[in-house]
Image 1 (cartoon, helix red, strand yellow):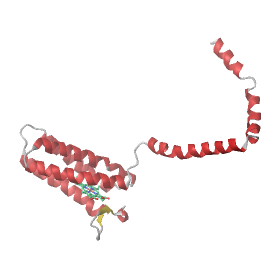
Image 2: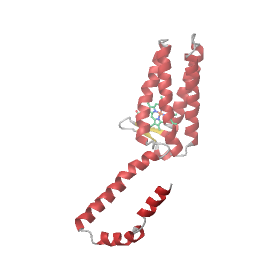
Image 3: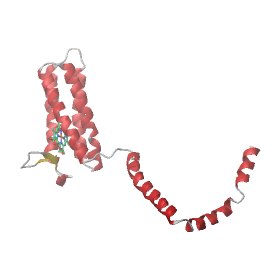
Image 4: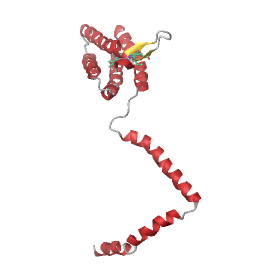
Length: 181
Ligand code: HEC
């Protein structure tokens, strides 16, 4: 312990005095050094911003992310329906799980925009995906129970689309209805 204390105190002398000359040294630095310092500072500031964004508790989920997720969710749900029609329950289950995962990620977008109604719609659809997953996980799948869950899911998709999605009249492309946000 003594050794540590003495090495700390040993480092001290002059420390307080060394501070004052340091600022005057900066003032007399060659202009090239100052430029390098400035470049380093700017670099730090710009490099820090993406790092800061990564540190936020939720990743930022943009409208582009929403678009990309919806574009993969669509075919997954279509695949789920096709698999159910064919009675291929294991593929249906995979598709249901995948669709559920994809839809679940989008909840961040609606939370960020404080759209409680949209968050609730997603929750309801997720619950139905869970119930469907449960049904499809049983050895003897109750196909009569599948149908109402599937239509419930589709109703949930459409309920949100009716409010928050719009279609470009010219291109037919879908996009977020910004005015509803
Ligand atoms: C809480 C709201 C919400 C829910 C629930 C929702 N969507 Fe969407 N969806 C949107 C919005 C908003 C868009 C338009 C965004 C875009 O495409 O840029 C969209 C777009 C789409 C598109 C068009 C993508 C494109 O650009 O071609 C498909 C397909 C789609 N959704 C499928 C689904 C399916 C399937 C479900 C249900 C399992 C679902 N969505 C549930 C909000 C929702």
